[in-house]
Image 1 (spheres, rainbow, N blue to C red):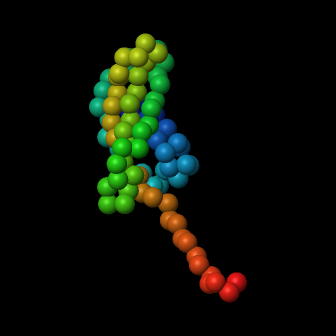
Image 2 (cartoon, rainbow, N blue to C red; image 1 turned 120 degrees about the vertical axis):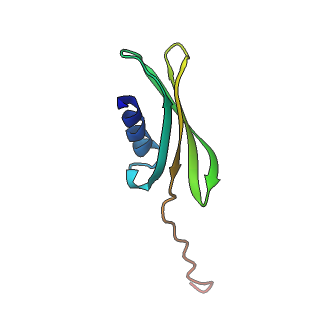
Length: 87
């Protein structure tokens, strides 16, 4: 459970560029043992209703896969402004 919380915090810092309130859902499955050095890989895999879906894969230093999951992240608000041709 502690590892899942750490992964959630990592996703909040990296995938949302410091805006963890944009995380809509995170799901993780796996077991990590004390003392393991973890390597976390985030990969944009799809879009769902305009939200980014990323996969989460956590391995140890030997390459053994320990924890996998996914997260759905809301896109940041973006505005494109066209002020006209004569400007």
